[in-house]
Image (tube, rainbow, N blue to C red; front, side):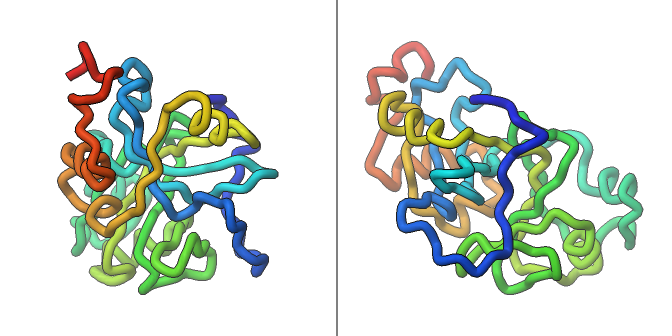
Length: 205
């Protein structure tokens, strides 16, 4: 996966009709063939996917151990301390690991929030974190530090020729659930797939 931090595509707020071939709003689930890569057992929520711009998403199943929410909010000057609500903090991907993206339910939207689909929004400013700290904001949310990205045509090649990813319909629990360790298997199970029965899983159980 090519690292492109400076020109990584991000969703916009345009009113253009959605691309019928776009996978935005779906989950990419790493196949066992990625077991020896940094994306092993990753579940990625795709926030953008177009033929012209490529794709961008955040990993939703790899807990970020440090910094914790209290320490991070304190670093950002977000009050109250401790916050009145707790959300998951994930390692969102290898690009821009110090940049935060809040993936959240569509029941709340800030002035800079970006609509991915009718259920999900992406916010990258501090307002959503301030609302969460105050016990308000979206009903469900997670903070991803960093993101993953693909150049135009790269994801399609990985899907068609590389057997790298499975595409899965998301559920609220697969995106926002706290049991990060179970998401990968649960996502595969939704396709009736058992990772231990796959040829590439041999030696990586």
